[in-house]
Image (tube, rainbow, N blue to C red; front, side, top):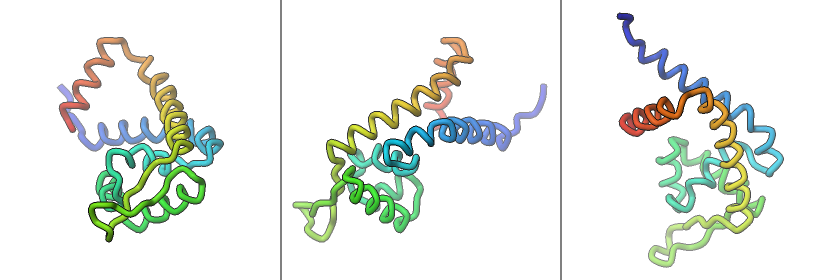
Length: 135
C-alpha cells in the first residue's frame, strides 16, 4: 500500500478550489466584486465585526479594513455604531450586497457542482462526510 502524502492531498484540494475561483472570477467581477470581497460579504451576517471577520477568514485586520471600505463605497455594506458598545462598529450587508452575494455564491456553487458531478452520488456524500469530519 502506498504511503499517504498529506502535502499532496492539501495541494490537490487547494488547486481544485483555486481552479473553481479562477473560473468564476471574471463573472464575479461583473458583479462589482473580487472573490475575496465576496467571501467577506458572505461572512458579515454571521460575523458582523471587522476583527471577527479577520479571524474567521484568516486575513489581516488591515486587509479587512480595505475590503470593508471598498464594499461600503460600492453600496454593498454599511458600517453602523454598535448600540451595545459605542466604541465598536457593526457591519451590515445592504440589500444590494445581499443580492450580489447570493449571485456570486451561486456562481461558485455552480462551478464547484460541475467538479462534483465527476463523482458518483455516494462519492459526493463520502467527500462531504470526510470534509465535515476534518473541520
